[in-house]
Image 1 (cartoon, rainbow, N blue to C red):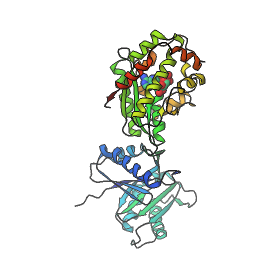
Image 2 (image 1 turned 180 degrees about the horizontal axis):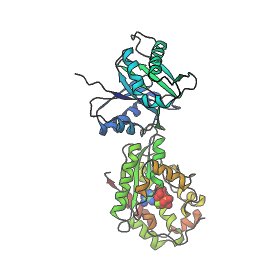
Image 3 (image 1 turned 180 degrees about the vertical axis):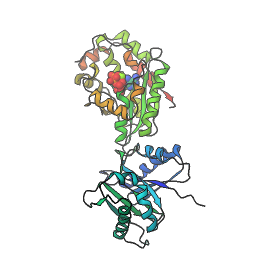
Image 4 (image 1 turned 135 degrees about the vertical axis):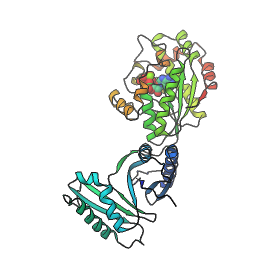
Length: 392
Ligand code: ATP
Ligand code: MG
């Protein structure tokens, strides 16, 4: 006998801001991302009809709670609901609606029923479905009153080709645009709190991510790299697959220590990162760089310091957390479950040779002079050449 699911998920992408992006591309990418995200959770069929995507389990092993959680992490979805599947039979719908929504109806004072008959062979028109189901709800919960303007609970009934569905409250989706609809960019990921949040925020705008991490062994440990992998695995629940490239950075850091004024260590290092990341990103067909910099947070994140790092980047640099307080960044880090990973104490290359008194108002002149007397060009080329792909 064919398997009939008890519940399904209905995804409404409703009124998307689709300026400049055509709807069919948007929906095709969204469906692909949803399929990939649901793969580990069970067998589902995904169907699109009008503006709704139906996620139907194909066997009894599918975990609907887990599927709901996955769907809530896919960008491009404003809201979704979980619905009861019933036979296309008015008496069956009348019986099922008060039972399925009992918890909500019990706590409500007012309700209304909204019906949609997409299957015109169903013998009852929408207003009649609403009236009949409304009657059944009232008999089951006599304390309720109908309020068509501002009800506490809206009972939705949809009669479609494949079956009838009962649902109510919409759950919030992750919003944003489907990952992959806005091109690709390289996230400079450190292991700190800010860069995973920056990655998440740009993925939300539809950007697919490649990650670039600078490692300086033996000053930084293998464990620090594993932490970056862990962070990226977490971000990929939202951002989809992320390719991680690790750049060997020791030679450059030691050369900076040996050749540059101490007060400029961090800035020269950041410029080297930007140069290397720009080339690596272009090789990976990325159109921009992303960092977790926040204005004024540390000496290298003042306006003059950022101007000096931007000057050597050959791609646009996106800094989605630039205007956020640490508290706001942490709130997002907690929401996406990267915070607890980020606060594990492993040395990052930024903390390897930290100047005691870093310059907060550097000029391009100072930096040009600091970079004049030694051959960083060949070291940058070597770093790019020796970039290592790491499986997450
Ligand atoms: P985070 O919490 O992301 O580490 P931060 O406030 O500690 O940020 P910095 O350490 O100064 O700031 O780094 C600023 C940004 O530079 C980071 O957000 C990240 O994008 C990038 N970055 C820093 N260190 C690395 C690294 N080892 N590899 C790749 N990118 C890095
Ligand atoms: Mg850091």
